[in-house]
Image 1: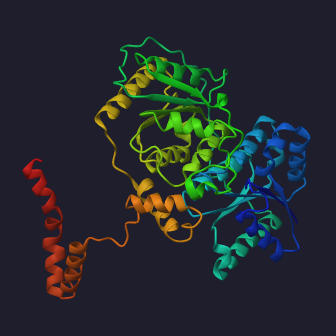
Image 2 (image 1 turned 90 degrees about the horizontal axis):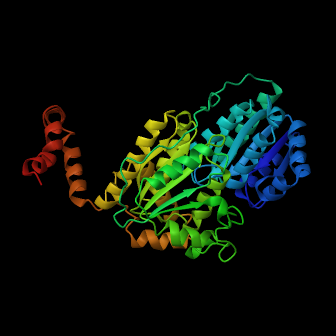
Image 3 (image 1 turned 90 degrees about the vertical axis):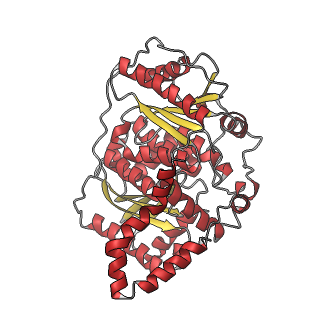
Length: 461
């Protein structure tokens, strides 16, 4: 059986992900697993049709496709994302139709689910027969139990192809609206109050609705809104995964293009950030993905803390809750305040005009008031994953994170709530007595839980 492994690591064969593939190769010598380094060679694949078609011909002659990649910012690396866009742009989807597919990723289990959701949706859009996915922690291969599980995953994939099993679809095709937005008159010009507002977009001339949404947002203010198009920023390439930034947040691209200066001097120094983009497949564009990936020179340090943030999106975002969650998680993990994610799905120009005007006003109000929404599981859970990993296995490569986390009290375990811990121990002992247990759980627990809160309410402070 011939399996094409589409390698999404920018490091090519020197990637953690490919070691899992090599292990499968060694344990299943009867199958031919051919690895094609997609992300590492993306510039050549993009520029030379013959190179792109070599990849497509390899897929055409295969029995199955294994999408394998490391997670970058909740998704695939930007280079891999660009390859997926090329499949659609060059209209070769037919080659993937009815071909069996599976996904293998490596990560620290930080938002690996959003990457897997994305790839399953892409496989469904390509009408592939999606068998399943495998999310490996980077060092799982060192443990026997995980090696066994990996081999079972591979066995299941091979078996599905051999037996020509029927597979279900999890995602419906996207339905794009036909609405073309025409901006209307500004009802009231908003004063920025001295706040620096930056709109980052990637719109192209043919994306008229997104262009007009950005213009309407900018014109909602009296003045002082800067708009930067990512297509006009010199960005030499996507994140290489080299981890050089782990030591002191110095990127390997420093001095080689404009991205670091752009992010440091304009993105970080803005008070209000609005990111504008159009839906491309199940995400924004690969240019936007490159923006997020390249910002990783800040490593796991929240670099946009305290800022007001929003998104302007053209396209069927309501049909892609996975992307909405990625946007929400990005804002929370940056310790920014996500004011809104606004789309053109209302399909009515007057309504969209009013929505954009209100969006602009809320951003300034939140900035002036210093309002920050409470964090949800997206930030609380995600930050704990980072904390635990930096504390242990990633402390050496990410020394900048280690210094920041220590300085800002992010190593918050074990908890020092000594009074609460002693009270809990005492109550646990008391509940060993049946009569006390009944008294506490049936009569005392609910009222005691709210007593401290009632005191604040009564004081009115």
